[in-house]
Each structure stands twice: as C-alpha cells, then as structure tokens.
Image 1 (cartoon, rainbow, N blue to C red):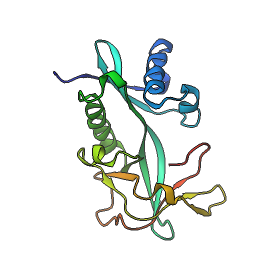
Image 2: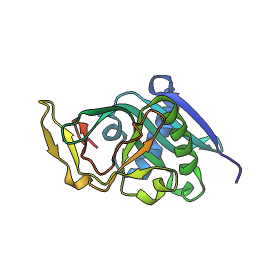
Image 3: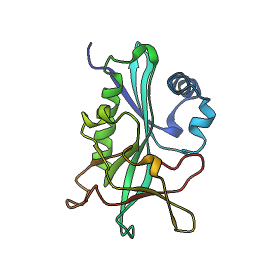
Image 4: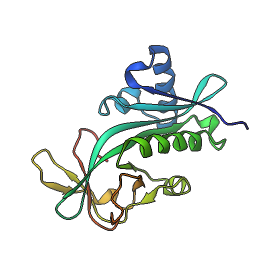
Length: 183
C-alpha cells in the first residue's frame, strides 16, 4: 500500500458533507452517535487518512492542560488526542498509524506534551507514546482532585521538546474536569 493521503483541518474548516463522513467513520468505529462523540470536545485539529477519497481513519487534537506532581505544580499545555478511529473495513492497513504519525508531528511542533487515554496501549507505544504509570486524577471545577483509578495505566503521553526533561511518569497526573468523560 502506498502512503495514504493525510488531510489536516480545524473543526471550523470542515465542510458539512465532509463532517458527515467523519462522523459516520467515528460512529462505525465506536458504535455510538456522533452527537455524543463531539458534544463535549469543542473545536480542534482533525487529522484524516483517506482511502479512495473517503475518510478511512481519524484523530482529533484539542487543547488541554495536564497537572503533574502531588500538588499539580507542573502544568503543561497538552495536545490531547480524541476520537482515534478507523473504519472497520480499513483496519489493519496502516491508516490509523499514518494518522497518529501526523498527529505526533503536530503535537511535537505545537505542545509541551501529548496526552490520550486508551485501552490499546501497544498500538500507541510502537508509535512513541509512553504509558503514564503514576496515579490519575481529575481536577474538579473547585480545584480539588478526584481520583480516576479506572484510568490508571490507560493514560499515555508523548514527550516533545517542550516537555521538562525530568518529567517523572510515576508522579500523579491530573486533567481538568469536563462533562461526559474527563480523560
């Protein structure tokens, strides 16, 4: 297979017909309505791999912050990766990997760190992401932390030139609360 065509666009640049195709891709991959997938995310950067002119794989980068350490003193601007999806009939053909290579380039150029939550650690590890081994939490609107133990071992980061060289992935990590799912 030749390298897939990768397209990058901001949410507001995506035409309605294209948005419908991306939403259909995500619905097919996640088996849930597109409205539920997009409502809590807001705007971001969409990276799409095409197969014969149609979206085969997708990932979205949104702006978030991660707080590292017991007191959350290290605050990093994160390129947080969401809705990584590949059409079921296109899986295993390199589209997801191609999208994540492009995502990594953007994250490395524009953010202090990349972050995502997944149940597919091996897929991301082979692309340079590392599993965060410290405890995870969510920073609530009042500033308090709520443990998110169900995410322990599922949060992954991608270090960039802006990542502190001594960042310790065994330390606690937290992300700001948002509706639906925080991580």
